[in-house]
Image 1 (cartoon, rainbow, N blue to C red):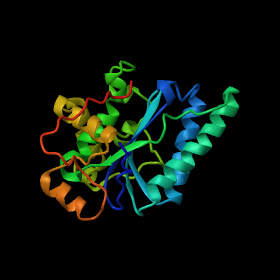
Image 2: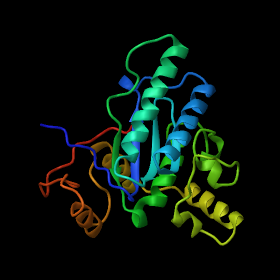
Image 3: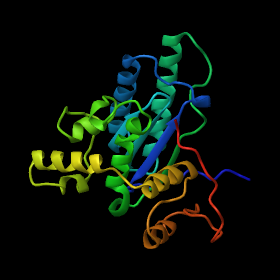
Length: 233
């Protein structure tokens, strides 16, 4: 069966996952992570992609972004992917591929899933057993949103500004949101949608998306079971 093209539309929220080939580590040092973040910041500005959230895990990373143009997200991921592989191969004296093929992504409905996806991304290290709380992990955007640091990569979405009237109120509200966590149903939906490429949202949202693209945005066969796609480790 032919692989569907990626679902990418300007002005919409995209959840992106890039994984290491055969689940191999994509970072060897803290400097590697810093280099990838710098590449993301520089190229997000260049290609007009607003990055709302991220997490760098050992063998994959997640992004939550809104591209301004139709080509912005693919251009960002291509530029970052190529530059980082050259850097990593040189520093580790290795050759060959680093990524598991092309990145995975889909569109998600802002009103229903934006804050849930931000929490999902922040909680990746907790689910993986790397840290006890999201605030303990230095390689995600969580620290920016709770006031620990300022991250030049991050563009807060409008819904975040609505969490409070002051920076302190917003930071406290967001910290509580992540502490509360998300449901297993939300977690599964966010994982499966990104890995499968089907849009995530209500029927009206999906229907409106379909009017904007010839690419199918949801499974065409009603009632067909969704195959299980394992979340990156």
